[in-house]
Image (cartoon, rainbow over the protein chains, first blue to last red):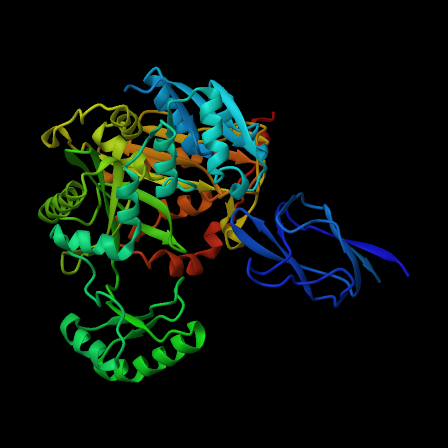
Amino acid sequence: MATQQIFSPLPGIFYRKPAPDKPVYKNDGDVVADNDTIGLIEVMKSFNEVKAGIAGKIIRFLAENEDAVMAGQPIAEIDV
Amino acid sequence: MAIKKLLIANRGEIAVRIIRAARELGIATVQVHSKADKDSLAVRLADEAVDIGPPQASKSYLNQAAILAAAQSSGADAIHPGYGFLAENAEFAAATEAAGLIFVGPTAHSIRLMGDKVAAREAAASAGVPTVPGSQGRLESADAAFALVERTGFPVMIKAAAGGGGRGIRIARSAEEFHHLMPQAQAEALAAFGDGGLYVEKLVEGARHIEVQVLGDGHNVIHCFERECSLQRRRQKVWEEAPSPSLTQAVREKLCTSAVALARAVNYRGAGTLEYLYDDTTGAFYFLEMNTRIQVEHPVTEMVTGIDLVREMIRIAGGEPLRFRQDEVRVTGHAIEVRINAEDPARNFLPNPGTVSALGVPGGDGVRFDSMLYQGYTVPPFYDSLLGKLIVHDRDRPGAIRKLERALAELHVEGIFTTKPLHQALTRDADVKAGRFHTAWLEPWLESHAAALATDEPPLAAKVAP
């Protein structure tokens, strides 16, 4: 089994939930499909979905909810 | 008590603007900043800088305790909130005063009053200022709603009382449509919000956005005439001008007088703006809301009146009375401001933070560039996309548009896409030149002019190379 990382496509603030009062998109250990949303990046007040981009199982998130992230920074590790 | 040291609780171009005004008054400046803003122009220009936290605004520019602690530790005696962030937070204004500091703005009471839509509408009505005709509160029955619209006339907007952000809004153009849509709206509001309460408001179609600048010292209030800000995208202003190209002198006088009446009724202190919808087919205007702070587009008023609004609000906060009588405020010529945002108009205004690799700033008489940029600056992704404002002033509106076109051609921000191509296309548009627009004009225009918005200019370096 190989491990791959999911990278933030943009710089900004990373959110694991669609809204503050909603549950997280994905938990550690969840199975994800290619097109699943795993989080949001807020860049200059606009919100952009981050897709898994690959199918597999999330080992763990490397960025926390509301972390400031750089473009290209790994935000999750996934078993493919 | 004259202010000796001013803390700026904001960032970006407005922080730079406030530092400049303070320095001209001989006031020392303290710039608070997040970790992401340690290299900002405001931090470079201020006398002192204090780190107040991580990049997220909620943990820095909105952190009241950190800002008040920075004021105490730096020995500042006043706080200027700029716009956005804590500028219209009554609790922060009260906390600032409770800490023995001056809040550069109105009282917490004024902020609270004008921030409450129903209270502001009531204050307007009792000062004789017209508001958009509609229900004074929620309507519980379709019969009560119909009785009301028979008085206001059609078209009307039916809005969910518990809704927001445009959700649950329906437009009825006739009694027939109204009877058809009202039960639908009620059912939908109940399903979506668990509350079937509705508001009904007359829809003013093709309305313009006109706002009046006021200055008060807590006793007297004057106006500095109006600005028109009808060119908007997603309710964000992109181009603002003074005077409005659509007001007759008679309406201008009525409008500005109404703004002073309302501001005086609440003993307003500082710089404020009263926003109105204006129907140029009937000459009717309706009060929308009051912004109890300096606005982004304040420079167009400064250019046509010669009054430095930021300087005046600092002086007033320091205890001075108004220095101008109403008859001393005059409009000379025409001014236009365009917002230079880090957004790519060719890709649906996609925000693009990044590093400014080269910068060319326009100059010449009547040209002003209020910005946070310098060459080599990296625009952080954490805040809004406003990089700066290009403002021009000329004898008349056609002259101002030509000057704007010339100044835009001299503006070069390399390394990031900006809204410059949008403004260049607007300066060449026949309707813009004729002043024929309203608040819903720009969005369809953007769809039909997508091709004109692509950036295809060569980089600055390519042109100066041999």
